[in-house]
Length: 263
Image (cartoon, rainbow, N blue to C red; front, side, top):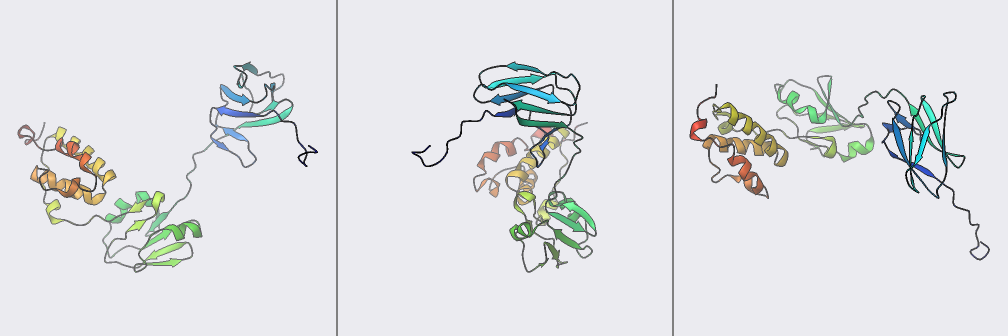
């Protein structure tokens, strides 16, 4: 230590939880579980000895040293217990009620009803376009700065945005928080006749979901044009790297036997 100009401390044995993963971790590092785990797997360093303490009188946990590093601890009792590694408290576990919680993201207020952005699409499309009030709500300034909106239609008010246009539905891109893209109206798509057999309708519904995730709403419109023509000829759906969709789309084309509804 004199040569290096600083003190050198001896390594301290430590223990870390490997399994099972807790429901959540409190700010003080306490691991929270909804029920007492049947066993926990701990990794230790330097072959340290472990012991468990709880508030249950005369409680003795079962400790099995699986290897030079891994330790299995079972027969845990009580609502809170500590795992000591060579007399140093290393792991604090507590059993508590773990209610479902839903972190707030980007939300839309539609006529005073609040929706997560990813679930608001159907509600928006059900409105007459001249009869709704729309506010985009975020939680922080950083989130508000991140969202991509057309300033021609939105007015920012702190961490919220107010939608000003009544002539069209908004386009919102909030990244992983969700997005909303209005489907372009297409008369040809509205006139499509889907009177096909039940098996084919189920197959088409699955393919439409696949196309919606891969291409988006406009891809579904293009797909329904293919259903109407019963042909993939001259379709733009398979451009831009989406050629892999072709066999799935072809599986939804109508055969002669599929033309009549199934009983």
